[in-house]
Length: 305
Image (cartoon, rainbow, N blue to C red; front, side):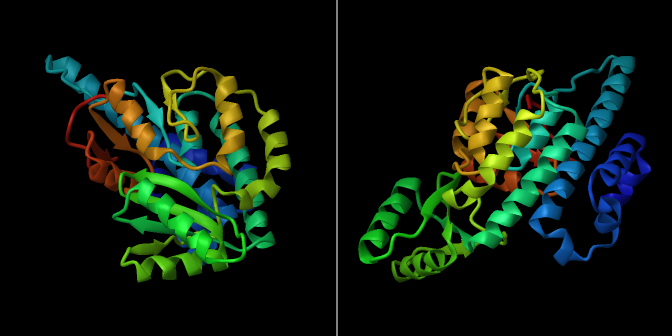
């Protein structure tokens, strides 16, 4: 993936710009690692954002080439087009960038600040995230209520991601997440710990909000060039101002991914492309089953993205 970006003019320019903006050499880390450095929140977030936007540039170039070729031979049946944008958590920033809300450089500066603030919040109070598998949101909420009734302390323990009809992520104090996993295991409910630095999308991120608000206020948001669905509401944002306000809340609010997919479907989306350094959302979309999704580079279907 790094080689493909480095060999492409636009993608290579983004990587060079990232190296100039960030206080570390992103290109070197992407190429050589080590993995434990790349996985650090303050490194991972700019890396994922940069990679996602670079891949978006490559994808757009590929679409343009296919359309040009098809138009020449009169067989233009290309169905993919950027009719709608959405991203999961950090992915909301690359989606907003692709929709013209802010430039790559502005987005990268925001993401770099976001990563540092979230990393600091993780250091201030230990947290974890736990995926509850095979259970609905209602079942998870009921389990949380029973767990809270069974303990005397009042830790932070909240639903952080609604990733699928039966994949709910809980976020909170590290010890409480451990105990909740044990509690669920006793009820024969499957879980999996997320490999993240702390309790994202929970009140444990509140210490980051003052500086995060300052960073957001320093950037002028443009109106999206196409409908953009935000994480906090799972609905299309009506203005750039609304998106900025929702990004203020995103750090401490659950990601409404199922609602995002449902909103996209209601707007006529029949297929989607996942542009980024993985295929997690493709898997979530497949389990949801409302429309097809394929990761960039493997797309074979046609539809409205």
